[in-house]
Image (cartoon, rainbow, N blue to C red; front, side):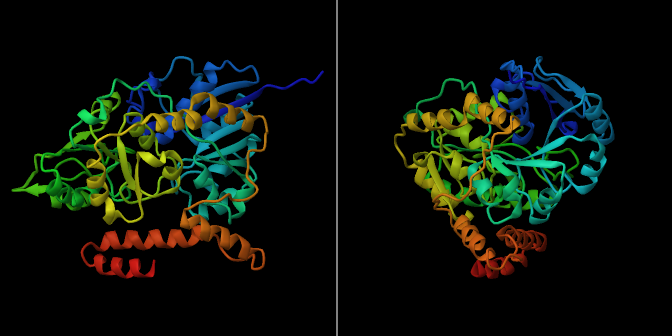
Length: 440
């Protein structure tokens, strides 16, 4: 008789910046805490509902918060206390989010050095080459989990690939009744952070172009520059970081006021479905990469056609007939106009695609397999029409003969750094931007 020892698994939930948000009803959708943290709550809550006898689950949270009642929550306001609780509870596996340069650092791992815990790093955000180097060398890190298959493939030419796998996020939403597509007004909705990374300024810059074709359209922007934190110094209108807000609003101001067709709705929880279910076109991310794209899923479930920048996560989450993934932010306006001209839309195949890939049962089964030690990795890349991955595959082959070559991720990091410098330069940066586009 084989005896399977119970595994104690903890999820590290860094909720300090949004502990005031009510997360007690996850089926109503993301209450405005960011997709990273919402995904963690969905997974641990779903595993708890399964009542699995092989796992003992804990949520280590920085602060008290309204959370699903079935969660076993333990407060860990600092990493030092986290280390103490890991030892006290004899935790076998700790799942942590990699969400920026200041997470999953050498300092963090050093404080957990004596816990003997296996760390699974969950990458909802893109990780720099430097960050991947740290994770690949760190003995505590046993697995690194991407949230989309295409994101996972971007690591193919990096040594982290040996530790890596992918698991999609759960998309299990209760969607209110939708307005039939044919009866919807020609309105557009954006949901997400309002910052330069998401490229929301490309949307406001494109809006007058959209109005030239659809003069009665409305643009609803749901979110805030404060979405993922509370330390940002906001601009005059309280919409975004003060310098970015000027750039964002410049195309849509008239006599010092925002034009009537543009509506900034702030951070919304379940109330956002009112807009998703009645608009025709949605915008997920105007200018940068997404690792997954919760909003893409929500918009497709709501019957929207979606226009967004082509990126790893959205390649996986968009059903091909449900919108446009463009390769340049300057194509956003034309993409919106093309989708607004669509007269009818059958979204049944898209909804079936979502249910077959992102349902709770499918996703949680992969998490259980991962915790049980099942190998979920790929040995090589399959065919893909994403040019970035073609370059990654070529680089992988070259590294067999020149092993000291860096991953393509390093070159992408340099590219993004240049883009940040351009943003800081403001108007003079536009000249450099044109040069960089020529190089690209």
